[in-house]
Length: 258
Ligand code: BTN
Image (tube, rainbow, N blue to C red; front, side, top):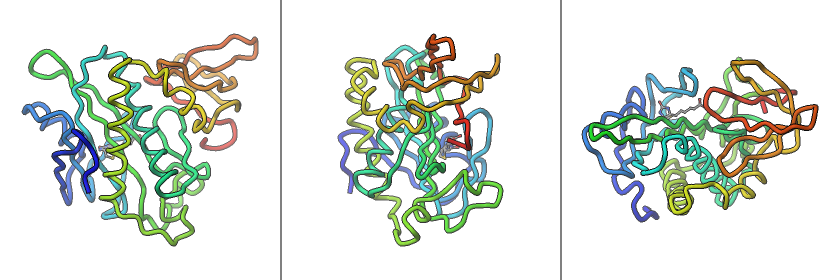
């Protein structure tokens, strides 16, 4: 059942596609309305962050992309990823009872293993403005994890001790409804200030040592949570605090994936 006011009023469901982000991009270029969603049972060319691919097998995942046309400064667009992470973790925690946490900025983890990735993309449109695509891949029904991803990835089915069959359509509707609420509030202030505390309580690295994989040079520090721009604050050994912008940087825990 649809529980939103404007997001997902049009949902296009595909059995198979290349990438739902690519589908939304093409629809957006053709003038599709903000809030349009494409979801697919399987993708043959799923895109991940930093040029990686996102693999999925038929019927095991919730794969969807959402079209937004925000009138905010482009440098604030990466904050939308954090809002989606909040929405997904809220639904997984409150509706399904999973101890879902956020690995800044765009992964959702359960028991230290990745269950969801979010890819936010920004493109110019024909009118000289821009549109945003928020694409999410959630591992729902996978019954096993490939050998190379053991200890790194998981699915909702596996984390429910193999006894929870989740309806992907219901999960999607729950996420869209939560995201809409976060996003509508965000557009009023154009800041994450009111979400910082909530985000930080779900941040898996909070107060832990992390390694910042900055292409200009890697370093270690203590994660102090995000600020109101969605940057990760990392305290260095000399006590100074750096603001890490999500862009091309990722952060790892010192012991394992999170
Ligand atoms: C990541 O963790 O690297 C982000 C992965 C995002 C994958 C989703 S699946 C649905 C949507 N379509 C894509 O091609 N990518 C996103």
